[in-house]
Image 1 (cartoon, rainbow, N blue to C red):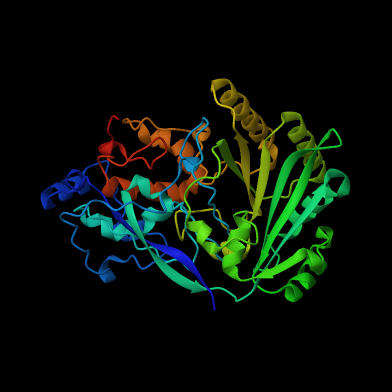
Image 2: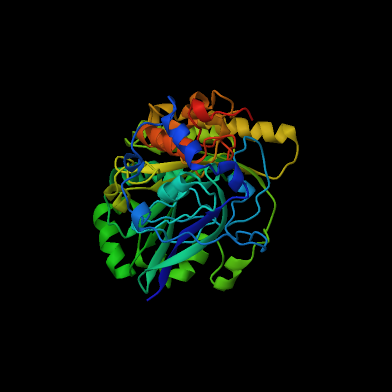
Length: 443
């Protein structure tokens, strides 16, 4: 049987002395009027990990002379929190099914599925770090430390999976198919994941939108087709359109390699091309009505280049409580939207043009997506939704984007943990977890 991977991460920091405190200093901080008063045990997220202080193994001694190891899964600029164009260094991407993670990813901020056991260990000298380390990963590790290494745990996958790709232009009932997708996708068989791409195209000199349904099923085609025929007939999937393969080959498929490629190409970190890009995100909790989809298609043609990606939720996502990990987007979400625009032209004028396009479509979608807060996906870092200058007002600034990434309860708990573990806000960026006022620091 083939095996899947997920990550068991090791954190460390060169700023150990900045975070280390004597026992008396720690006591003083805990007793301060603005420090969290909630007992540490209540700050934990519901444990799906092994990070319980009383059972944690001893921390290893930090290396004395070895230079820091580079992290082969370190985030690329394609996911840096930037409002402007940046160069993509890799085509690698994460693919998620409703059953479990189905491909390796170099993005470490939101690996929050139930099967994962995330044990992050900090060489900081701060005794709180071990207690809370399991929460750092799913909250964006950069707010709490420096990721230098990760370990891999294996879980089983079936010997055969099935992939498919169905394209429908506007005049081929694309709107009807997307409408039905919304009705069934969060309730369909847990072994089936379907992503929808909405892309502006030109057909016979006429601008239009094409819907592409890309699927992965954890099983063979004979088991898949009765599911799609009965629950999603608008897809029109037939057996000739299905391709069965080992799981590792499906990783190549999702990464857009041809069927002659070897899995070893996944180790090649040389980019095929250099692009500029911008991403944004939304969550859909209520199906967009057909008239809304019609207007969306027209708006995409009007704007020009921005595409949308719908990633289906449901399945095991619904089985994990919102409070189980910092990642809160669980039951109630039908799918996540990725707003996507890429361009090759250099210069500020091109940057402004394409970024304004994606912002315009994001604004247009306001009536159709989550609200109060308008939720966002942490891995699509987006400075449009708020930033922090990490001053003494960082909590109020961080709350603007923090509620969107983590929702209120999880955000407040992360702030309390951050204030205990990193009260001086050493680990900070434009969208890091803020500290309470006692630990505020001017950047």
